[in-house]
Length: 197
Image (cartoon, rainbow, N blue to C red; front, side, top):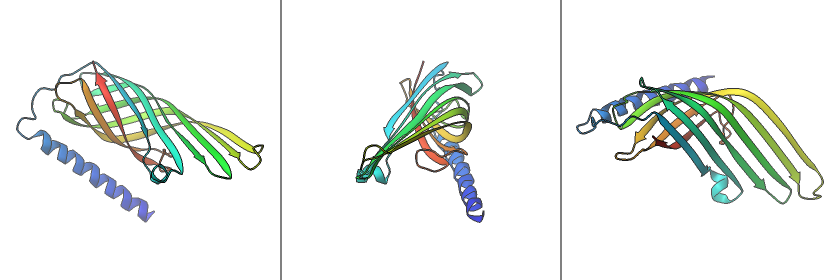
């Protein structure tokens, strides 16, 4: 309990420091140029998850996401999102595949909307499906698979960096959820590359 409390304090201090940094950056001369506002945004992510297994070649993990957001005038945006990840491991004894799909709806409130660097807070409720498949390679006959479906959510502080003179932006966020992410933890860093129109 004490360790969790210390971790929560560190995360709180990190979030506060981050918002203060964004305030300072946005207050610098030249950062007050009007940022174009668009009604629609499409975000995408597809990348290998870079952990120890990736660099040692013991397994592969891929993370993906696709979302659409309708952007309201008051800094609120909302829309559907499909996301998930896929893991695959193979040894001399077994082969393991694990696939997670998430179908959800998210809402976001953006701060400093007139600036190129915009902190935000996001909440996403989603339906998660998990599929495990384990097969032993010794006989090729012993196999085990199971599914698990549930409703859950995540909350995330983050920052959106608008790329000047383009319709592109980069969202970076740190997600917290009661369910584990691809890193086998209940919190994870993630990103989206967006196109607005």
